Image (cartoon, rainbow, N blue to C red; front, side, top):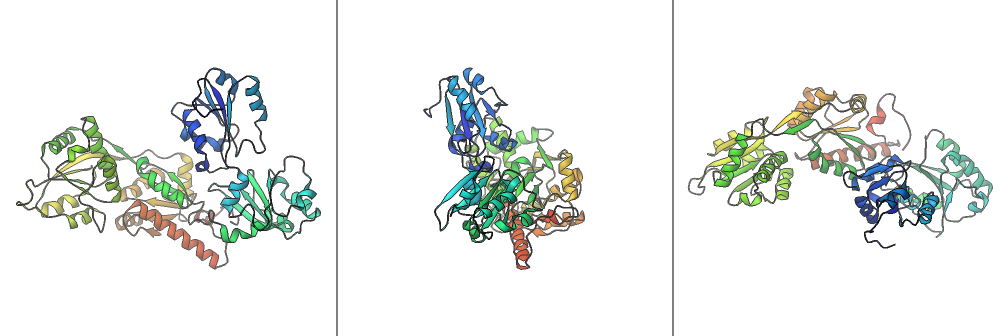
Length: 515
């Protein structure tokens, strides 16, 4: 059917892909964005895909035909590719019988995606690639004759029996085999074995579906081609104790390193108790009261931007003003607002670094000697003292308040104290104080990473061992430092002939399994 928007309801059977929500097709994302209702089926793993939907979309269990008849666009999410070992034949037939328009959107199939993420080419020296569903009756002797790569779906419960059947069919017992579960996700876990050693090698692996069994010489290339499970923080569960807005880019960077970030707000940003001071500051900014405006956080930029929008102003109100930003994240927030900072520290990104590069007041060059500092209610006086010494007069204005957030849910608190997290990233002294205050101290196996010396000092005051410190005070540098630490730990384990382990696997009682 046409890809144009329908004039009446219809059903879209959409391939959800192999597990990684970022492998969804553009057409699938487009349909989810337009959907009136979404059927997840029995797979809750598809729930993250709802982020593509508009607010208010209904998550339903059935009634595809009825809803489409009433003019709704219904998206039925299907595991992998809907037409590969299809389980939707009856539902599609029901749509056709009821004369309901439908569309089937292919998805990235696990048969190729999981192999790619495991570092196994679908076909190597022998260009044959065979996919088998073990849930159906199979002639394993005929599959044993496959000279290329054999991929087996739904076979994990009978893996040893399948291996014996393939050997009985003439496959050498030394034929390489890889078993991979939770493919393309950060829970992916792969064991490499051979047909003859499947029983001892899988005995304690604890595999569950969805999993794939891959048989063939191509498995031998995994050592050279593995790229996903060898990421520096692969599978690490990392606590990001920041505000939701601040943690987004940091979490995205951690995901790129293979980590599973868990955002736990420890600080809640709220407006000042009385708005008059900010109202006067914005008025003064517009009427030419200030020569400079200095922003010491992205939150300060956000607070001023919201005040501007309240008054119907935009970035043009900064015309004629000089603008300073304490660091890269603050500068980015300004650029997104439409303001390019005139001063950004080239060295240390802190109040001290800003003062070190701030020009002294010169009555011949500067018609006005006043600086606006929209800041948090708990800011230190370092910047005010430094600018005053340079001859400037500062209006230190409370733009927002930081208060301790509510405690996280009990499972998060238990994971923090029990060693369920592999690392925690502290981006300020207040995140240390507030996390310990609302959730308790992280377990001693957890890697403690801090953004700078002051945060390290606070962490140590709370009895925490600091393992990693960023080489410059930015969230991006902190994530990179943790990734470097993880890579070194992995390399050290491999050099010692050991299997790399996540920090949380070293706590007493942690489940031990080779990776």
